[in-house]
Length: 145
Image (spheres, rainbow, N blue to C red):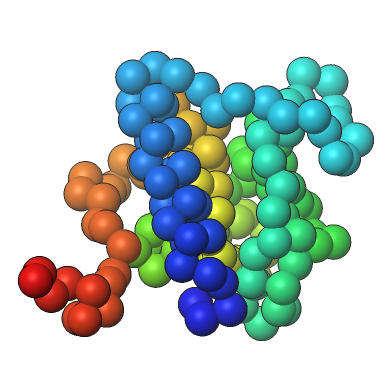
């Protein structure tokens, strides 16, 4: 992900880790001021750029009921499968009624995965994930001097 500064990647991963800890202790994502029209009872949790496979860079908005990516809108209750890959800053969503999986990546995508899981499952990770991998690092970064 050379298009992002290392500080951005670290900040997104750190935010994911902190939110995951909060959700696992029974907490919830914090609502922010809305940038889209919300439905009754809906809260917005964030908005940020993502790279969508096959579509390029888009703006993603996550709410308590929807994920809006560019001009596409996905109801969270329609998510059939969620495969976070935080070590690659990637999230793969399969949505009922959609022909193809939606693959997104970017510095804030791991955080987005935790938000969606907290809304769907009340946990930080999908039930099928038991171990959360850390970010991949270059070999030269792992050398201890």
